[in-house]
Length: 476
Image (cartoon, rainbow, N blue to C red; front, side):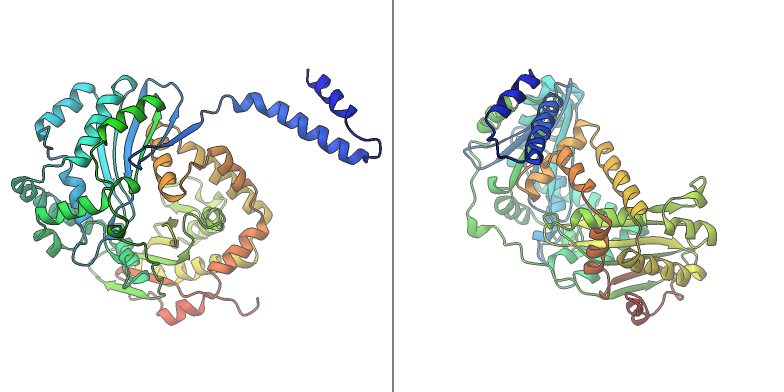
C-alpha cells in the first residue's frame, strides 16, 4: 500500500521537478508512514479547561492504579516578609479536617481505600495529590477538592500544627545541605520574594492566625491558578465531570487580587557562616541560570550533567566519565559534590554544592571554577554526546510511575501552559550541539558574579574577590 501511494504521488509531479526534490518527498512520506504505527502506542495528554477556569490534564494508559492531584500556583514566592510561611502552614492545615470530614474520618477513608494522600510546598507551587486504585479515583478527587476548598482551620488544630512546624524547622536546621541552599537563595535573590524560605521564620509561625490562613486561601486558591492532573488509570471525561460538580461553588477570584509575578533580581554576593565545631565544610557556588520557559534551560541542564556528581562511596571513581569527578577521586578533593540546576518561572540557580575537609576547600574551589571555564571554552564533542544520552536516560527513567508522570504534567501545565511530551523533550535534548553548550555557558557563566555560601570550618574559603576573578580566563 505504501508503494501504491508513492506511485500515485509521482504521477502528480511535473516533469521539470529535479530528482533531488522528488527523493526528498519520498523520504518524508516513507518516514511518516513508518512513524505513524509507533505513535499509536504513546498515550496522549488530554487537556480541558472547565467552565470554572480550572485546567484539567490527564494521561491514561489503562493502569490499575492512578495518581491524581491539584497543582496550585502558590508558594513562598507569593508571600511577603510578614506572611512568609503561610503557604506551608496552609498545606499542613488541609489535612486537619474539613467542614464535611474530621481529621479521623479523613484518615479512615484514605486507609479504607488503601490509598496514599500527600502534599508539598515549594517556592512557586503547592501540591495536593493522591495515589489510589483506578476505581477509587472519584473518591480521591472528592477528598482532594474537599480539603482544598473546605479546610476547617480550627484554633485547636492551628495550635497543634504550629508545634509540628516548629519541630520541622529544627530538623531542617540540622540538615546542612538545606541550610546552605536556603542561604544561597537569601543572598542570590536578596530583597526579592525568592529569598524567602519555604517554612518561614520562627516569629511568623508563632503568631500565625486563622484569619491569615483564610486570607491566603481566598486570594491564592482560585481557579485561574489551579491545574488538576492525573496519570495511570484515569478517564479524562469522567474526571472533568467530577471536577465540574466538585468545584461548582468555588469563587473565581478577581484579577486584581492575584499578585503579579515581579522579576527577582539576582545579586552576586556571599554568605559565610563559620562554625569550627562542624567537622566538614559545606560550600555552594552558583550563577543565575534560566527559567523554565527560557530556550537555554535544556542546554544548561546538559552543562550541569557534564559536571556530574560524585561521592567517596562510588566504586571505580577514578574511571568516572566527568573530569571533575576524576579530579576529586584522584586528589581526594572532597567527600562529595553535586551539580544543580534549580529552575523557576523566570530565573534559576546553576552551580555546584560540595562537602569538603577544611584544608581542601581552596583546591576544590579552584577545580570547580576551572571546570566552569572549560565548559565555556573547551568542552569536547564526546563529552556533550555522553551528557545528552545521560540526561535523556535520566529524564525517561524518572517518568516510570504514575506519580512521576502526574507531577510532570501538573508542573508543566503551570509553567508552560501545556504538556511537553517525553518524545519532544528527548528530541530537544538530542538537538543540542557542542557549540550550543559553549555559547550558552559563555553567556551565563563567563565573567559573571557568582553567589557563594559557606557553612562550617570555612577559614580556607577564598575571598569573594578572588572567587570572582576566577570566573574568566585572560587567554580567551
